[in-house]
Amino acid sequence: MSVEIRRAGDRFRTQYDWLDSRHSFSFGPYYDPANVGFGLLMVHNDEVIAPGTGFDTHPHQDVEIVTWVLRGALLHQDSEGHNGIIHPGLVQRMSAGSGIRHSERSDAEEPVHYVQMWVRPGELDLPPSYQQAEVADRLATGELVPIASGLPEHRNTAAITINQPHAGLSAARLAPGRSINLPAAPHTHLFVALGNVILEDAGTLDQADAARITNPDGRRATAGPNGAEVLVWTMTG
Image 1 (cartoon, one colour):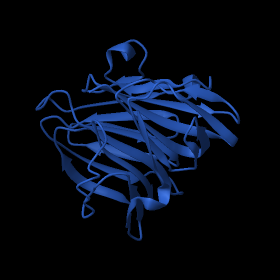
Image 2 (cartoon, rainbow, N blue to C red):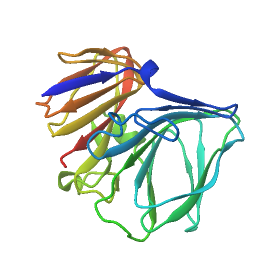
Image 3 (cartoon, rainbow, N blue to C red):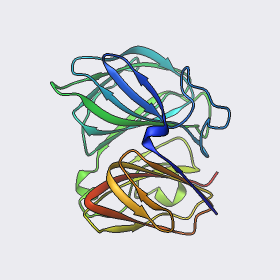
């Protein structure tokens, strides 16, 4: 088993007057052949968009895109006629499939802060699709909740599904001192979206830090004095 800690300040960063984006992996003009993904996870961007701005219509193909908002609201519109406003506590998935075009813009008078994650699909060239679901009530339990998954064990519990049977995203909102057990899998990616956590045998991870865990044995993550919100990818392939 190995644990690789990636600090927020060490990530690639794209900055414009309307966008501040930090990339966990090679993205756009930033390329590192030793850092092109982890397991099935291709993109893990932590982004802030200024009010009234955003990404104009652009294409995607054969990728599963999951979006999780931390503050503000994000407006989604796509070429298949889907429209959605994503806010904290709501998870969204867009399966690009054979090809889709979409836009993402701030839908509030405050900046929108969100995490967007891309996963390789299980099947190529499928019809594009879209799904979103509220999960705030389930997160209030303090448990690790499957929110976007294709894993067989999450078939009846995940809030939404993705076209990848070997990957699943879970989230937890932890009160100070509350702990969760991370799933055991060949690849586990822990991202501290808010607050900080202490990862067993690895130390403290602050906001926007991540841990890439290979062949874990169920390590515990415990929220710090201000609590934490974490996003956990479990990947069996």
